[in-house]
Amino acid sequence: VRYWLMKTEPDVFSITHLRESPNATAGWDGVRNYLARNNMREMKLEDGVLFYHSRATPPGVVGIARVAKEAHTDITQFDPASDYYDPKSTLENPRWSQVCLRFEQELAAMLPLDDLRQDPKLEGMVLIQKGSRLSVQPVSAAHWKHILKLAGVKLEKAAKDG
DNA sequence: GCCAACGTTGGC
DNA sequence: GCCAACGTTGGC
Image (cartoon, rainbow, N blue to C red; front, side):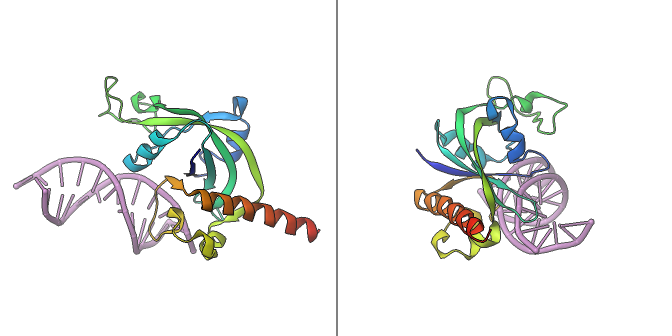
């Protein structure tokens, strides 16, 4: 099992949208960046995904999802009415892929980007590298574990504080 | 909504 | 295959 982080604008597709999707599962379409696409093609069933809200106030990790279906053709590339239409893609050789994600949990307290930046244990994480805007990125097992721990610790503290 | 940092496109 | 111009991302 490997770990990933996927960015989405909550106005477009939020963790709530995923949770409320049929079977709490949805296709992650619209990725139009080659490196992000290649990362999606590496994903395996049941890999863990940090669900990240970008262009939010504040931006941060808001939940956990699992890969429910490995990379397959993103059909929006063939739909002229779609924002994600790509006239240069062909049916014979589709350019863009998507995976399906299944909702697992929403963090009781989201982890803001700024907190993640401050954490020495997350040094080297792609998310916090300067200028990084990769929307689908790998996360190391150590970073994954630490982030889950942060979410748990934050919960405990909230409970203790009442 | 601004704009810096990236990524892509296309003329040459 | 270089690189200027253009388009996009995403924090702020």
